[in-house]
Every structure is written in structure tokens, then in C-alpha cells.
Length: 276
Image (cartoon, rainbow, N blue to C red; front, side, top):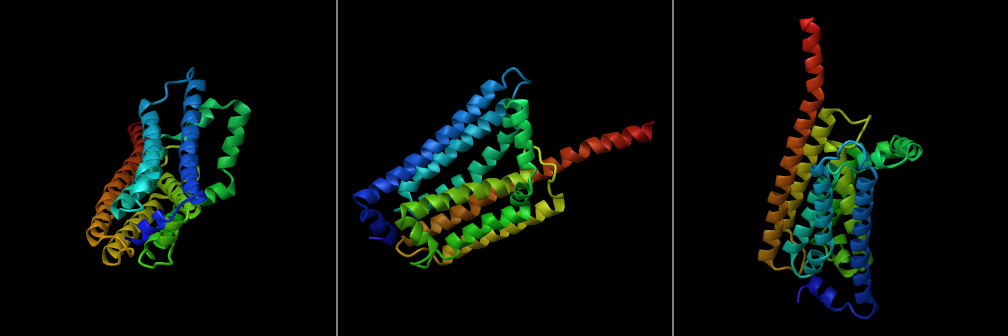
């Protein structure tokens, strides 16, 4: 029996309850977030129409996160491929969809004037600006993944610890989701950001992250966690490599489209001035 399976099999009594509580708390939190978004939609219904695509992205992102912390997380105790599917959903797909849902913009539309101004001031505060800078967000995202997968072959590493402790499991998954969201928002965020980093910085951070993610996938292929079947480990590393590429290419395309959209009004203005 593999080490992760043995760890899961030895959970009993209050330990089993701890895993169930963690999963239930995570799903409940996602449900609350979904309800808040729906309330904001209802509250702002008298204003200009809210794009349906944004709402669809938000709820799809929450569904991806729910899959990752629910059935896929349970299967991950026995399958590294299942674990990697959860990683891609929770750390890359869900953050991208949630960012495209533009939650801060919706909140500013739904809140009363005074509360909306307070939220706007909060979003402009230095700690928020620091956390949402691409370099900082990239370090949080890639650094966390390196701690998790760079030491996966170590039986005393974070990967093994996560599979043996419900609390560590919850903390790691929360970090993956939040760090993925901050990283994605710093690159292709749809919410207002008066301090957005230059394109060169965004592109450089994204390309660096792609390289780190690919290196970790190759490292996992060569040095899989102890106790997992070799075929399963190889499939998981390939899923990490190629699945991550799909999301990364999507980010590159969105980054380019965002740059083009930002430049287009300037080009039109310059043409108008020239024509005059």
C-alpha cells in the first residue's frame, strides 16, 4: 500500500471528522461566495446590464474549485493524476475564471456610494498594491508550487505532510487558490487597477512562471513522490506539463488582447489629431 493511501487509511475517529470538516468548510465557503456574487447581481440589476459572460466565468470558477476540494481531493490520496487534476483546476483554471468574473467591479456597482468609496480606497492601499504586483504574486504562486512539488520525493516534505494532515491540506489548497488568483489578476485582471504593471513586466513574470511550472513537471516525472505507481506518476507529470501549457497560452493571449485594447484608443486619438 502506498504511503499516501496508508496515511488516508489510518485516519479514524476525530481524524476522519477533521477531513470531512475541512471539505465541508471549503464547500460552504464557496457557496457563500457564490451567494454574495448573486446578491450583488440582484442589487445592481437597475444599472447597466452586467455581461452574462462574467457571471458564467465566476460560477464556473467556483465549480472548478468545488471539484478540486471535493471528490478530486478525496481521490488524490490514491492517485497522483487525480491530485494533479485538482492542482490545475484549483490553482490555474479556477483563478482564471474567477478573475474574468470581475468581482471587485461588481461589488463597486452593488454597494452604496460610501461603501463603494471605502472599498476603492482599500484596493488602492499599499499592501493591496504590493500583493497584486506581478512579481510578488508570481513569487507567491511559483514559490508555493516549488515547496510542494520540488520536495515531493521527500517523505518528510510538504507534499507528504499535506496528505497526512487535514489542516495542512486545507492551508495548502487555500494558498494555491489565493496565490493563483492574485497571480492571474496581476496579469489579466478585469477589475480596475490604476497601478497595473507595464506589459514588459507582466510578460516577463508570466514567461518565468511558465518555465518554473514546466521544470516542476519534469522534476515530478523524474522524481515522483514515494508510494505512487510509476505509470500514475508519469501521467500526472504529463498532465501538469501539458495542462498547464493550455492555461498559460490562454493567459498569453489574454495579456496580448488586453495590451491591444489599451493601445487602440490612443491610436485612434493620434489618427484623429493627425487628420485634423
